[in-house]
Image 1: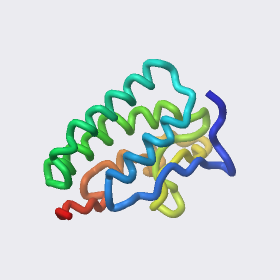
Image 2: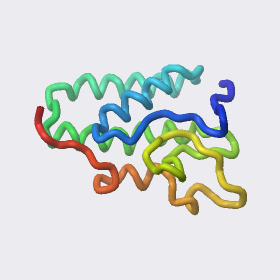
Image 3: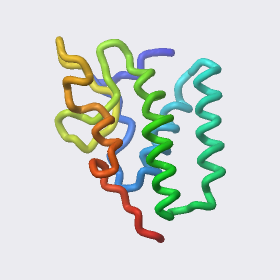
Image 4: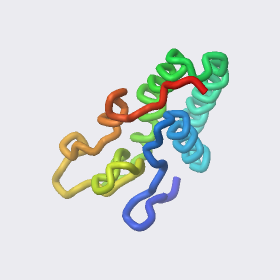
Length: 132
C-alpha cells in the first residue's frame, strides 16, 4: 500500500447530513486502496450488509443500522489505514471535513479531540432521519 497523503492530508468526505454519503465515500476510498485479503473480505461483508438492509430504507431503523455500521465496522477500518504520523478523523481547522490529518507533535489521537469518535455520536453528526 502506497502513501495516499497529499498536501498534508487526504480528504475522504464532507460531514454530510446523510450518513449514507459518508459511508459511500469511505467505501469508495477503501476500494481504491490495494488492501490485503482480510480487509477486502471485511469490506465485502459490509457491502453485503448494506445491500440486505435496503428494505429498511430511510426509516429510523435503517438510519440506526447505518450509523452503527459506520461506527462499529467502517471507522475501525479507516483508522487502521492511517499512515504513521496521521490520524483518521475530523479536520481540526474546518470541523466539516473527514480524512487523514497530520498528528500534532507529541499529542496522541485521543488528546486532539478531533477523531471521528466525536462525530460518530448521533448528536454530533446531524443526520436527516426524515422519510423521503
